[in-house]
Image (cartoon, rainbow, N blue to C red; front, side, top):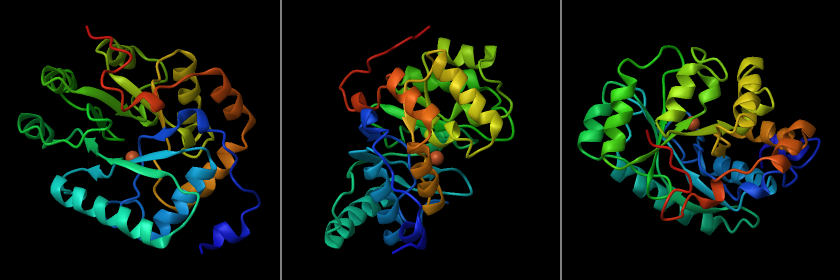
Length: 259
Ligand SMILES: [Fe+2]
């Protein structure tokens, strides 16, 4: 058992139960900068269940050359994880309902579009992330090309890109293109600093955010998620705002705002 679970001052409460499904986490052991073992994944999953999540979709990084993951291998590892978790007979953990990816829009991305090499969230959404340091050159064209292939797009943690201010015209432009936003729960508690926190609240208040995600990587994140479930501002926000997480597997997206 991980030390933090033995000695944590409090357990999670089900603040995020209205979301139902977590659409963004890194709990396939050993494939990216997320969980390193089945034991760590189990510990994180237990906290996620306590926090209210019934279902979890795993989304490992695809980023060249740092995480050169390949879809067939990821699918096999996901099957193995499910078997291992079932064998552990741990109660009170979420269902692992899907495996997709968090795709970095990098130099290899256009070829990925060309060859339709995506594992999709809910069967239709490509979860994308951008560099945390510099804006993507030619972004509009890449997003347009994805949409031309009939993919719905979810942008992971728009609040974390330092070159976009909270509700800037550049982000407005992405919303106008029909791109869904997924904010990280831990941004709301200041896990990534004050600026992402402020921007996350601003975007949600503006009605720009369709999805929430844990972006769970390891037990440090799990501890922060426990704390987030007790955060009064976050509890209030969860009571006030509706998100589409529980509809992620619907055959048609609920909201489409194409140009
Ligand atoms: Fe992530």
